[in-house]
Length: 226
Image 1: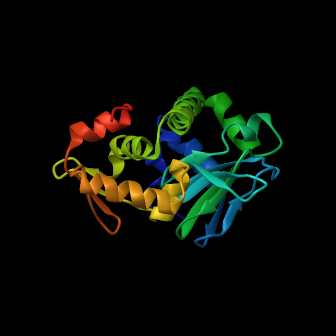
Image 2: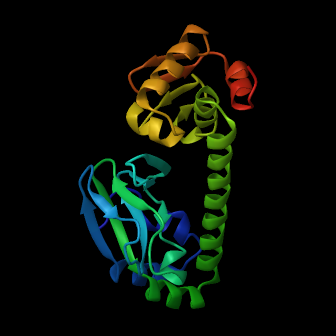
């Protein structure tokens, strides 16, 4: 069963032999999740690698007071649970489907066995974990050092997968409520920030479509100017 992005094109499997990709995918388990359905909870035991085949998930942490911080959005081809399948007994975040999604679960022991034969798989895992660490550092910097307009500017400027470079238009794949959770803001505060940037002639918004009108000023906000 395979829909969405072809398994062989997923970065985690780049350079891995077709034979071993077949082993990983045929011995894995495909599971469908509806929007709002939990894929994995904080402190849940984990012994598998997870790969998003289609749809979109979010990784997030929740406080005892009910406050939620989205850590990362995951789309087709994105893996998660890479380190926990090897090193720890539980997952340090929750994963929830934002839209109808298909996820491949590969037993950690199977990945370990294949990785001993395929150095490319280990290198891919190291590269992905390194990028995740960099993203986490950027998130910490944004939340601790920037005001909401600056956080929003950073998000819009550093998310090229959603941007049409010719028109500076960004089509959000998430609601503004979900975007607020990424930015560590309330939906009301995010709405005020969007309205202010629109009034200042920096952005134009229409539903989930955002057009950058003044990239230089937006970059200044991302760097903490203004």
